[in-house]
Length: 227
Image (tube, rainbow, N blue to C red; front, side, top):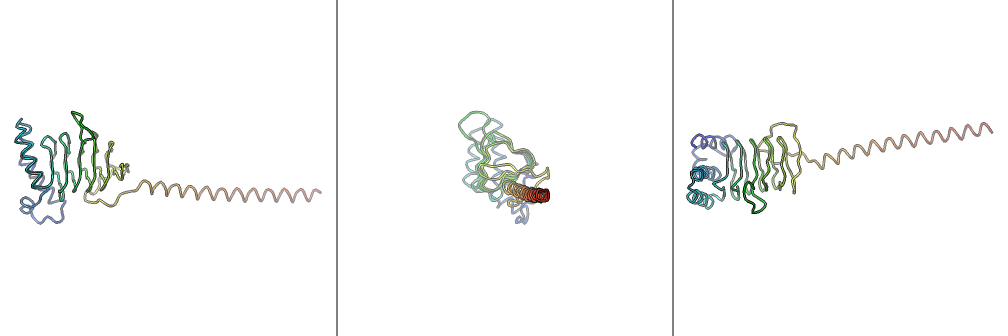
């Protein structure tokens, strides 16, 4: 547990430019405090002391504004930036070195038993206000844009934007987890492609019209000379 908490602390220092030192993060950062308390609650959960686990998680919720069910499985290096309003459900699985911003929900879509919350791979960023709902996976190195609502699986190395979210591939390049605004827009890309195609078709039509006009003129001239 201590190695994991150390990794969590180091991740905050690496990704938060406002963090001045580890002491400040340890005592004052609500997101780190929520993760730290989750680690303790999860230990009790896995040792079948579920009442204590739930009690610890609810205390953390009241103190930090972050609700993490002690049954969730979270890897090393999780950073919850700002923290307020984050909800992480019971069967959620989060890989290593993930980044979650405020008002994010990793939730279910009903009252089914068993796995009902999402699984995040390694190095996943979930932007502020995003909702990831359902028992599917978000692949490694993927990003969920701020305000997106994700209801289906996201492949690795992709960005999901919009409501409902649509996927944009980013060519397998590991993204900058701190960047929430520079996303490729698939709609704009498709419109640009269509615009270029229409211009090419227009040029071809003009060429054909010119060719037909010249052929008609040539035929008329030939007919006049014959007469």
